[in-house]
Length: 102
Image 1 (cartoon, rainbow, N blue to C red):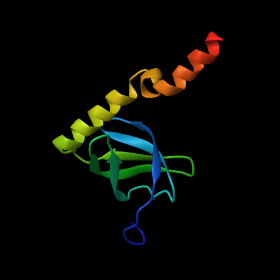
Image 2 (cartoon, rainbow, N blue to C red):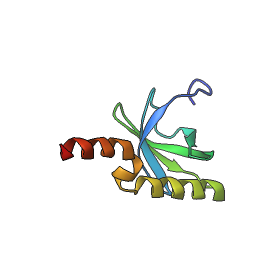
Image 3 (cartoon, rainbow, N blue to C red):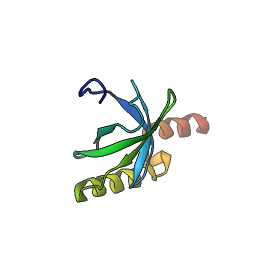
Image 4 (cartoon, rainbow, N blue to C red):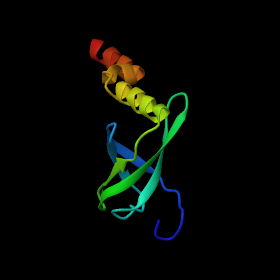
């Protein structure tokens, strides 16, 4: 990093086995190497990545070769994101069904 190690937060926009894009506070510069920590349901994974592009709107990261644990974590995360929305937020849909039934 340009001024030494620092920690920042971000929101992922998309992810694949090769990289991800995210909204990041204090976006890093193109070419920097970063560690991305992703909290999962039962654990968290850390991945080394290179910043491929960075702007005020989003930053793109390319992962270095992933450990088997990181590969499994990303696959599980993607599978979770592919679930229908009503299974991810069941209580919100229960309330809509109750209102619609009146």
